[in-house]
Image (cartoon, rainbow, N blue to C red; front, side, top):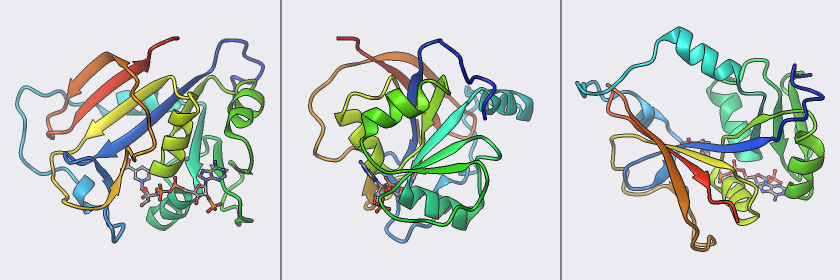
Length: 190
Ligand SMILES: NC(=O)c1ccc[n+]([C@@H]2O[C@H](COP(=O)([O-])OP(=O)(O)OC[C@H]3O[C@@H](n4cnc5c(N)ncnc54)[C@H](OP(=O)(O)O)[C@@H]3O)[C@@H](O)[C@H]2O)c1
């Protein structure tokens, strides 16, 4: 259970994804070395201390993952600690930790009925299929897109062909010493 349970403040759903310069979020062979720091330094960039990063991550109340991202995270080493995680799947999957719940069904119900009463700061961290579905359904409040300084040429595209035109408001740009750039946007309210 999260410390924010019973919280009446409005929930916020943030999509967070790391993309290559040419718009891919995964390589065909699922290898992740392209996410490593390139070694060169962008002098005008900022860097975050471990304490700042830990404080930031602590403010996340819940992660939501598609099942393929879940399976890949288990292979790589669980990065979400004991923070609650909801995995969206139509399959019966084994639960690797106590903090994991599985969900199958309507995604608006997931957000409005299952998550919103319990969590405020909800992070949807992939993959492409689940993020696109959330975007199509208008369930996303913020997009944080981190661009890695690498061209991949092929792989899994973050934004597929199913989205329609929509404007987003730029909220922040952060360029890091390692050459990664983070773009933060909020949804335009209708
Ligand atoms: N670069 C990054 O920041 C980043 C972040 C996250 C993931 N990734 C990568 O992206 C890849 C995975 O992405 P992906 O697009 O292939 O898959 P995904 O979105 O992680 O998972 C897709 C699965 O989620 C379930 N799902 C999705 N929508 C659903 C719905 N509306 N209702 C019920 N279940 C639903 C289905 O599971 P079932 O088939 O089990 O029913 C579907 O097969 C991996 O390689 C991962 O490493 C990269």
